[in-house]
Length: 352
Ligand code: ADP
Image (cartoon, rainbow, N blue to C red; front, side, top):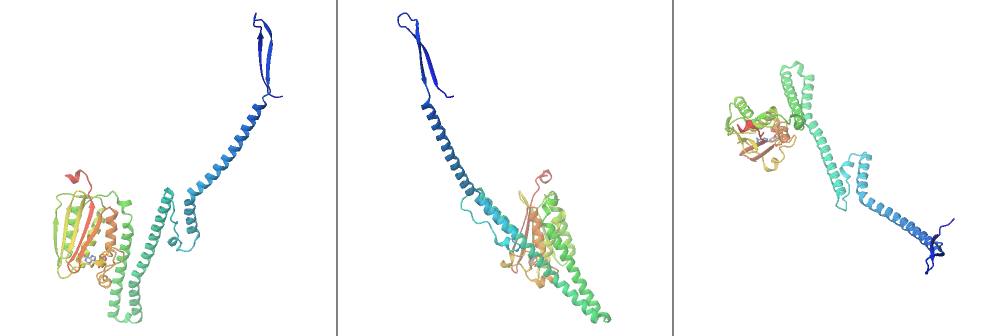
């Protein structure tokens, strides 16, 4: 029932080499067994120590590596759990100490929250602006209707005046609603009209001719450097709308010198349409803001001219939707220059 090591050998006589006996050595392997047991024990102990060591190390390492995910998780949980609207504005993933992909993830996540926050603020601002803009015409219409109710029914002069004024305000509301719709649509042009191609020369000339016809008291000067069809990637009506907005402003904000210039030109990559007037101009402090929604330099005067302060925001959004640029240079009292740049479509038609 136990292991022994046995070695047996024959013994021969030296003289005549015949078999004289057997020798047998037996080892009961006590040392061997002891050593084996010791080795197994050592192996087990070391394995255990190694396992505990690895477990501790991986726990430490993973909590060090995944700590940022916990922080991100915490932040998401807090934002989701917090019913107060300012949670999104105030809560951010704290700056992480080590520089790795997770720290980058935290930073990207914060950036995304910032963008969402800005978007929400813009929406709130938009709703506030719209309500504010609609309040005046509604108040005017209400005033006139009350006037009519009290005295106007029997007084044809009051009746006439009030109906006229109310109709004017309704027309203003209609144009305001239309412009707001245009503005919100302008944000999605790329998805809907990203593939439309338009001959900018033809549209430019058409708008120019139309303005010449509508405003006979103005001098319109055209400088057309485009030799042939010049295709740009934009939906035709959108380019026309932008040019109408700019030409309309040029006419609206001109004073004594009733002159508007339109220049059509191109370089290797872009087409430029420049509309210049010699009117009141825009001061440096206002120039960055004129593209903001509902921004008017002189609110009352612009309102008199039928402006809602949305034209330039629509124009810029449309142009940027087609990867173009709309910029302005202006000097007070000397006039303004609005420049539309749109990327050219590179194809055979254009080369021809
Ligand atoms: P509005 O409908 O009031 O014209 P816009 O968005 O088209 O709104 O223009 C915003 C403001 O920028 C205008 O109220 C006006 O003060 C200023 N502006 C725009 N175009 C011109 C221009 N050609 N000359 C001077 N001021 C301009």
